[in-house]
Length: 171
Length: 100
Image 1 (cartoon, each protein chain N blue to C red):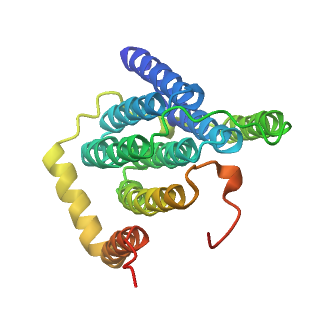
Image 2: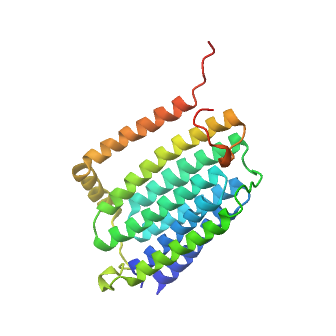
Image 3: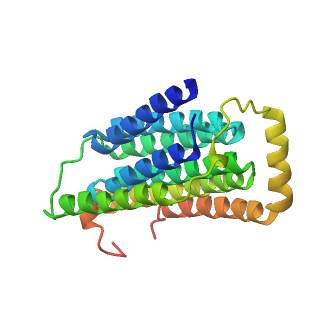
């Protein structure tokens, strides 16, 4: 019962912060709401027994990515962009399509067969060291090639970001 | 008693909020944040199923998704800064030329 209450409270915070991100007029508030959402999702990862992913979520998403967002927002002075309504039918169409997507996904969740095996054990007290060791064994044995490709991807992104913002030499 | 369905429904709700953001907002920064929210919702479903099936593959996949999201944000925000420098605004309706 306790874990259900914890889940409901946390999901309310997650959904409210996502909606706050969507409806804030000020872009800085949107970014801060998104940080709150990422932290709540990290708590969900802890509840699900994935402490490494939870910490990676906080450092990479809530730390690095959102700081980069805030940096760019303040660099461009884009806190309060004037609302531009070029397409009057865009917002109703967006709401209609999202509603269709919502109905589809909720239907798919409740249409599939029930099974008791899907209950997440409430007191899954995961040993953090054990989780890390298992994860490292899987990552560096079974998924070694994707891991190396990821490093190349990060290198390419880094070079790309630098090249895009390189100042053109005069002459 | 929390089953995996609860997490899948929460993940679907967060994904739909992100999709609504991409479809309805005109600010490219908000659109980027909505894409991050959608990636995050998918990650939540991955970790939930990884916990149910007691397999680490889902968590590994989330690790890769986080790395790809970081790369995507770095390049995307660099593009936005460059567009702002050449056009002096970041209205997404005016981003209609490849060379500007």
